[in-house]
Image (cartoon, rainbow, N blue to C red; front, side):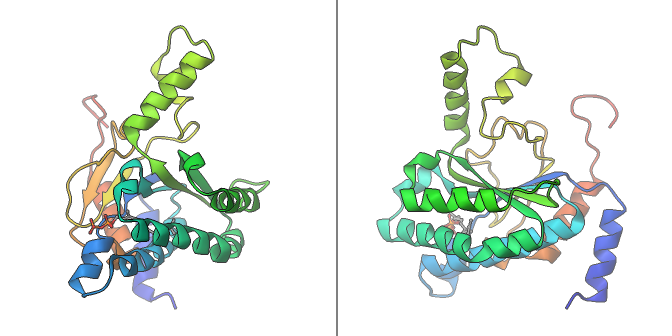
Length: 245
Ligand code: FPP
């Protein structure tokens, strides 16, 4: 049940400038679990629930793109059992949640070096993308970044441009070769768990992004914190190098 207070907060925020694109570094799953004497995998499972809550809130506020860092190029260095759990979690999410996404007119996209994932998981991703493609524009698009690294993406883009014989690139033409081609740059980037760094996420795209950090671990993240981040965004003056916004 939606509380009256939540409804009022959402209306107030919607009357202001809603960030069209929000990026999220979902950090602190392991810390959350360790604090409770649970295995790290329990933190990831609870993290998947937090992602569902945030997706609901982003859609309710009118955010158009939500881009989440689900697995980095560096995450392959983690113990095999943890990697396997994450892969199982992605597969479970895809098997169970697609009807919910369709019901709510939400599109899901997977971006990154996807070929490194098992063929059955790649197939699930493709099917989920197909099933959540609509004739009319979606309410919200969720981009799940997998086997993603900002530097690797830039090098991949440069090589793709060379391959098709580009002679001279501009900032505009270069962005066509990034995984995020066609997406606007993020307006707001949220990172949980008290870490104050970008960790190789959206290096090119976040040149003028506003950052918002919280000490809360990702499994504890919810709609209320998402609204707090959006409220902070609305109070900022974005100048992007000029004198006035
Ligand atoms: C970082 O926390 C989190 C990850 C590497 C995995 C993120 C994945 C999810 C939230 C699962 C849900 C995603 C989908 C698409 C279903 P950490 O393990 O680095 O935490 P720590 O810094 O406390 O160790």
